[in-house]
Length: 414
Image (cartoon, rainbow, N blue to C red):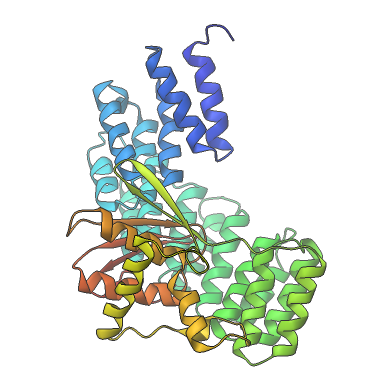
């Protein structure tokens, strides 16, 4: 196109956003501004979703100011996108502020706030907000119930979860979708009701997806149920045998149980099928630049200032009671010292150390992880928050963890 208009830009920006290519979308947004084209509400919906994908809070705040300056906050959808963006960038406080300042709140706005509370571990507040929504005469939708079930799952509220799940169809004529089923499996699995979760999936009115079985496999790992884990992975392999994480979860579960023959078999199977493990990656935004770190960075490289700082940090943590959980490293051939080094350079620790070095004392450190945070990094983050008097907000693939004064908002239930 020789002279694209804002509608053309919107189409491409939206396409990039939907394909999870936020950097390309944001680059086009900047190009649009250079050309003095005026963004619309549609533009901002996609741009805000890109900020959410990146977990880029500072950029998101700049976008919020841009929205207000251009009068785009009059649109309910834009304000709802702001709630979602702030929640996904780790600032529940800002999400609440946007919600409370909305003069009109429709179903998506209420639902966004309920989901925000749920993902930040405020399960009871999510349920309380739902009650306020009902009193306001606003009808819930499938997203509302997704937030409620998520809230129940991450707070171990089994009875409440079943009540909300049943009310979807019985009271509101909403047909549960695959994500609602997933939340129920997660709820049952987290609370140790593994056989009930298996039966729940097996008796679904729709064909289960690999994700449902993977949710149960993760629960088997958490509760140390090797035999059920092996049954579950067979169900997964019937649908998809290409996901490296499945092999790793069961292999680690078998290793913890001392089942080294099973571990060797799974690693060989993984190798024979050409399956690779997705590396852990954590990112942190500093001065409007997003920095990425991968697990293992520094293990076999020349030591840098960051690695040296992390080495010193680990020494400080040990002085206040931190003990590296080497039981989480499942390589029989590794010695304890090697296992400890492997844990030290996990992506979360690298990102947090970078934040300590490059942000003002007392400021919040915000990290985004592509996988579930590991138990050792969770423990280390609690100690770091106490030693340095910092709040650390870590968003992993499942939820937000708010570390403050040596404690985490998840209550170690995740």
